[in-house]
Every structure is written in C-alpha cells, then in structure tokens.
Length: 299
Image (tube, rainbow, N blue to C red; front, side):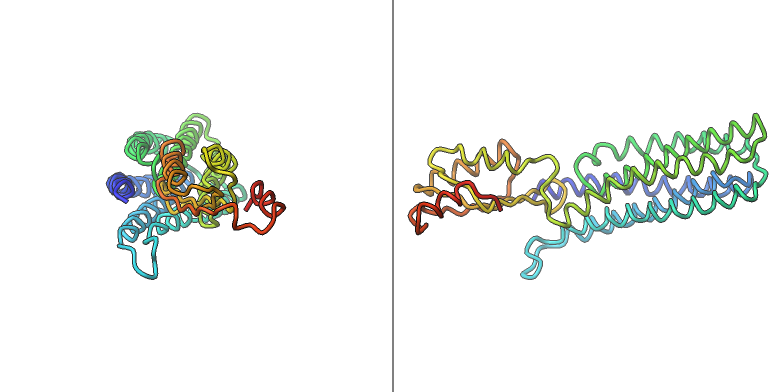
C-alpha cells in the first residue's frame, strides 16, 4: 500500500496549507462583512468556515486511514477517506440551505450594503481562492477526500465572483437587492457541484464499480486469455481513492498459466493491483447446460 500512503501524504500536506490560508481569509471576510453589512460577504465567510471544518475533517480522515489493518478491519481504515468526503459534501448542502434562508429574508427586508468595501474584500479573497486551488489541484486527481476539499474551494471561487459582482454593482447602482439575488444564484451552483462528490462517495460505500472501469470490458478481456473458457461472479469495487479491488471465477483447465496472465492483464491494462481469482475446472459442472449457463453468466 505504499502508493496509497504517498497519496495520503501529498493530500495531507495540500489540505494543511489550504486550512491555514482559509482560516486567515475567513477572519478577513467576517470583519469586512460586518463593516459593509453585506450578506453576500458574510455568506462567503460562512462558506469559508465550512471549508475550514471540511479541511479539518479531511485531515482527520487521512490520519485515521494511516492506522494499520487489524484482524477485525482486514482492509485497514482507508474508507475513512470516503466518509470524510461524504461528510464534507453534506456540510456544503447544509451551508446552501442556510444561505438560501438568509437571502430570502434579505428579499423581504433589504439592508443597505457598502458596495465599495464588499468589492475590495472580495478582490483580495479571489486571489486567495486561486492560490488555494493551485495547491489542491494535483492531489484532487488522486484522492476523493482532496477532491471534496477542491470542490469546496471551487464553490468558494464561484461565490467569491458573485460577491465581487454584487459589490461592484451595488457600488455603481445602489441596488441592494443584488446582494441576496447573486447569493441565491451562486448557492445553487454550489449545491449541484457538491452533489457530484456525495454521489461518488455513496457509490463507493455501496461498493459500486469505479467510474473509470467498465465491468463488461474487464470480463471480455479476461475471457480472451488463452485457456479461459468462462468468466463469472466478477465483482469490481473501490476501497479508497486509487485502490480498486476485483474478484472473479475463471473456468479453465490450466490454473498456473491462466492466473499469471490474468493478474498481468488486470495490473497493466486496467491498473487493478489487488485481485482475487479463483480457477474452476470445467469438469466440476454436472451438465453441459450448467457449464454453458455459467460461461455467459453475470453476477
């Protein structure tokens, strides 16, 4: 699991840096939002607060995932990463509900907003968001936990652009209703972007096949190995990011040659490094009908 350890180390470093920067800029926005009386700016600060909590959860999940496997937890604690990502996504949805509620109240009772202060604070925060995205981007391709954090920052960036526009437009026009209007618009964008992480985390927890692999394509490739007469009970699932597992039964007369070729195929063509293959001799089936059924069967 050295590769998995490296992924966790890179992800932990990236999120640690992002956490420190996030807390600093969250405090900046809280102060700026209070001075400007801007819901959009305070909402963005609240979103940064949720980000900070999510980053802390991600770090905790990485720490748990490093614990050694036991007789009870034979795969170790790698799934903690997935639970962290799911929690992070759900926190985003809670934030969205809060922002929509606050914006609705502002529609009923608009408040005066200092657009120039909002514009200046949002401009500074925009730079922070871009820097944080750059820090998290490499690891977001390797870990769903970091991907969840990365989507938090993208949501921040979208919200920050909304705050920047709101501040500029209010500064120029004096229309305070723009503040809650843009808050609602970008909150909906955050809701749908975080839905992808929640769906992916649930898919993994339900032991679904990884999105980048087609089970039928894997089955077909295994069936093409010389000596393999059938493939059945094929299962693909994910333990954690980059850790794909496969198990299946192969019908063949020569076990050693088939096993070696099958493991090589799975490793090099599909990047599946953890596979459990069971060889079954054709003669174990009691009738040709049973054999033919299993040869084309699906799990």
